Amino acid sequence: MRILQWHCEYFRYKVTKPAMKNIPENRDEEEKEFRNVLVVLTCAEKNDIAETARNAIIAAEKHLKEVNADSILIYPYAHLSNDLASPSIAITLLKEMESFAKQRELEIFRAPFGYYKEFETKMKGHPLSELSKTIP
Amino acid sequence: MRILQWHCEYFRYKVTKPAMKNIPENRDEEEKEFRNVLVVLTCAEKNDIAETARNAIIAAEKHLKEVNADSILIYPYAHLSNDLASPSIAITLLKEMESFAKQRELEIFRAPFGYYKEFETKMKGHPLSELSKTIP
Image (cartoon, rainbow over all chains, first blue to last red; front, side, top):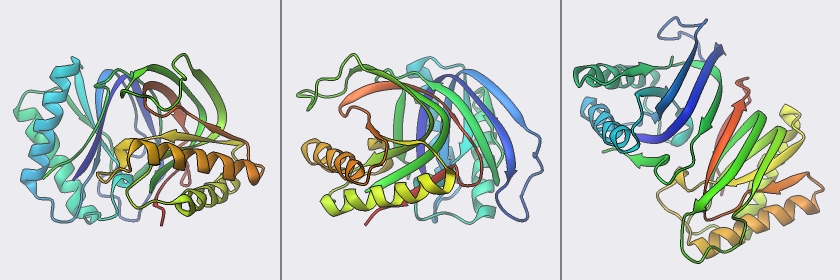
């Protein structure tokens, strides 16, 4: 799993249209805004398992505390790897991240998978505001 | 070379602080804004050569025309790979991209290398607005 973490002053997204047939969740009207958020752009890869998803949340939680962000937004992002998991595995792993973060009592949100989305953001630009990781 | 291309309604960046000793160019006050721009987040990798840089511009030019953007912003982005070129090679390749784009009479800009930067953007969200590529 590849993740790219941004500490953002704000982050808004809006679903524009489906990016695949058989979208695994119906969220085609969604539009959200977050403030002081850690956005975790997430790319599930082949061979990722539930433990990988949980490790990603552990990494994000550490980063959240370092930068003093209020919440985590899991944002599906296929552009970080050439070795993608299948859509059905990817959505399962994203949901595992969300449920594991809830168990840890983090303020967690998950943007929809399988849609094109526009986004608008201000990424803070301090030395810890952008991190990328390969999650084992 | 890994690139991530965004078609943005606007993209602003502002240098915040140096990210390394011996910054290869002194641009520590820089702040710029672009409209209807193709941002090419660029990560130079080991084994990249001048031809790789030129291939990246050829890919970006094709994308620029498809989405009808006005200009290209080369934006150094180390977060797209674990196999980075050295800083001295990376800056050479970024400059090669810039000069090759000028030869092709593209409207080209290059954000500074070696600095932390904040950015603010609206990424358009249409089906061709985000592309990632590994450039041979």
